[in-house]
Length: 274
Image 1 (cartoon, rainbow, N blue to C red):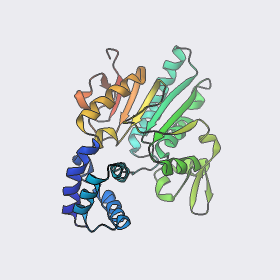
Image 2: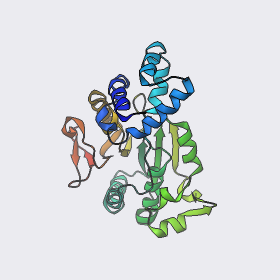
Image 3: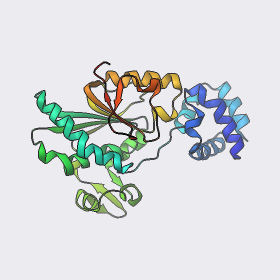
């Protein structure tokens, strides 16, 4: 499949899925490979005939939507972000919980893929924070639309490429080596729950202290949908709650309702005015 044909097709199709082409500019190769496979399945010759097929088969749009999900994830992605979460953010949230006489910090990982982000957070908690706050538990809800990825997350076994960025001590002591995979021990999995959910349609019924929405809504979604998602995320954050987005993402509305916590890093606190 020629790149030019794939690009032209996506520029036509993505807006109809409430997605935007600029977010796919560097990663459309994933979608191109899936489209090629789908054409073979349907015995179609090219993307022009697939476009005609879409216009005649409304149910195919949900298939295309699944093909446009970009899954790039690994443990400890954006190391400096997790360092600051361990050194500053989680201790601050623990102090806030103690001041309110609460016994847990509730976090949500949206678009969690195979669980690497959620499990990285629990590793940071265990290795950096929990001994300082023995009366506080970290509870994590992780959501994604892809049932296959969620099953991998439940299994919690990963190849070397997924765990290689972790500190060596964490990798050696928190994982069991099984064949060619690294399997996370139960201790680091027990407070993480996985739910199949599409953030465009639903969000967990809870109020959180911290939400991760990285490299998802504010990369791939159309502007109007980004505005809606940001407002919905704000409603799911309690007073003083923290929102973490991708390091190359920008909040819509100039981040109205949120205040940047650290210079040049996309970690925000919910404004008291919101």
